[in-house]
Length: 291
Image 1 (tube, rainbow, N blue to C red):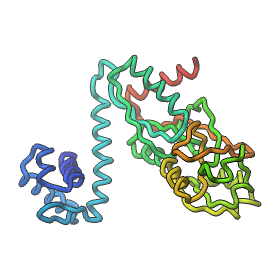
Image 2: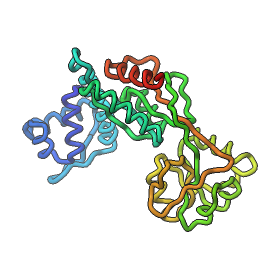
Image 3: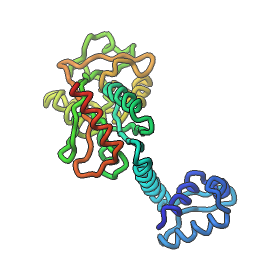
Image 4: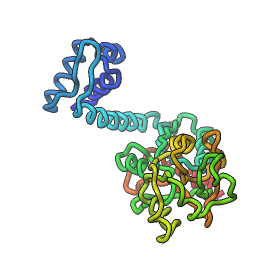
């Protein structure tokens, strides 16, 4: 299976139209159709349901689209890593959770690019678990990960800022008038909790054996923006990190009591070759933290 053919397939799958995909790829429509048929023969499966106006992916086609995207992304990153060997250049791909440490990391990216303007950064917003999966597959060079997270096979640099947990509530909720909320304060309300199992275990420890079995979970979420919309819509109370700002009008944040805090680390795999751009950025971060 050639990367060129995978790129053909991915473009057709994305556009859902062979004519438009052929124009984007600068090949003739018969050539593109023939390449797709040969790919289906090679894989022994049907990838598309074809009609006169559009094509629709089969189940196998959906799976291949996801794999093709990862492979093409990895190939593009590899190519960029070999460009301009004389001057530091290339791409640094970072998976980032929702943390105030992103502001600190952004300052470091900006100062690094002042010295090396040919280096580009690609940011992938995700939970720690999702970022780890992409690092394992070679799609990310490093991750800015919120604790708790298990990283025995990774090098880590602790980030300077810790963040406290809070209850995100509607401003007309009785909890909004409290200076802080306790475990007992939360029990009458349906809760929106992280879908990360390690975070759920941490919150379970905070509630304690007496209170946690009585918690009513209304929904699980990964990133806070959609959870804020659900809170505003009356789904319940979300337990999340205090962002220093309210992510949706009409909401309030009340810190948890007893206080619960989380830190963040920058992590990268121990046994993985790294480009000059990645090594240079890691050295830049270490120098900044030492200073």
